[in-house]
Image 1: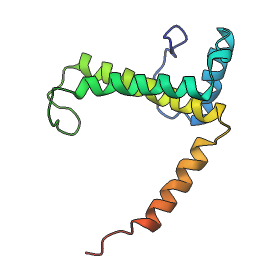
Image 2: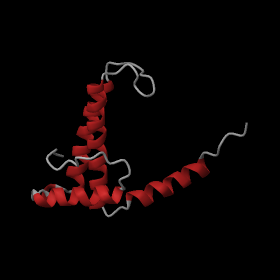
Image 3: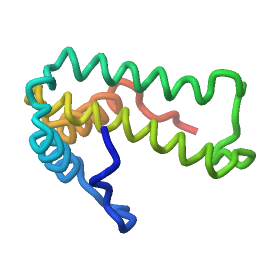
Length: 119
């Protein structure tokens, strides 16, 4: 997705809408909108999921928080996770899906489908 327009400060609370606007501006500035069809974005995201999978491919199971990982490996993981997220957001926008609303509805649906265990 490119790194030239990266925010300098660390952003901890950014909305999906904020990311969506940034992605749209990024694509427009580079005249990439013509390439951002649903199919192309999906295939690009699948490629990024492949890159994400490669990070874990030969590591076996890993502990939560990745305590035995080098910081550079964690940074690389963050980059690949971000690529997947950004393509997903862009795909949802191009398809006219409000991803935040859809995800919230899905959580509610899953809560009904999978009720909590009574202990």
